[in-house]
Length: 386
Image (spheres, rainbow, N blue to C red):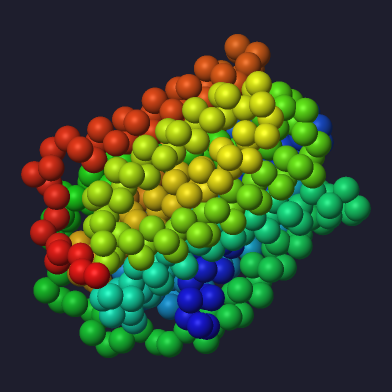
């Protein structure tokens, strides 16, 4: 239980800043007098910065070992949140976001190595799902806590609360067992080519990341500006997506390992994510549909990560887990970094959300195409049982 808690809290700490940007969007825009595309640029600084260094950070995680890489991730995450909370200028928030990008880049390589080294096959799907659910759990917690704390004490104290929670998760990580001595697998070096499936996952991750971050970053603002919801209700929509994401990540991790396989699961996820974006278009005429879209988004676009990371763990040896995770994250975080500002720019230019939501739906469907074309790179994994 402690092991799963550390994995989950590490992932949540490394990514909760993205929830702060989304839920506190109106506060940040007012405080620093910035445009929507500049708000999206914070996601770019954190995600694209993390994407660029992900392969290198993945290799560093392999060299550091899983436990040290995990504690380093939490330390960087805390620093990024503190930097956001005390920033006097917009550019200092960008610097804090860049630090958060390093933490985000290291989180999956570190925690994937922990699973590869400590968890036997057959249990990895659920554990990976629990690990990845830390991201959505943090998102849900942020959606619930950030608005009322910001109203009562100010947005800076709201962010500071999550910096404190990240620090507490760092203390938990000290209880993680040491890495096994066989972690140094001399039969697999940094020069060994990665399985082609890893690069297919990176491409898919780029698409899901770019389209998914548009929804998660701008869903609260869309609910306020176009659907007439208040800030608390808008934050609750993020929380709903987060709770759905927790269920989706654990459920998809289990189904992918014992029944569907990672390949087929990712196809299903792309279709459901496209449906979520389509529902957001319809929500302009029926605001209650935003809750349906939030549930679908959490269960699809948010949940792909558990299947993608399980695929990495299943496909490569533990000594390559960090590097392979870094390559997949290069695609995923690259998509995260580009999707939010592009979507924000479309709103500023067109004055409406509908074209952006349609483009997001098309992008998700292209993710389905990516998984269906070129099946010759499908990995030779054991047939799912159960």
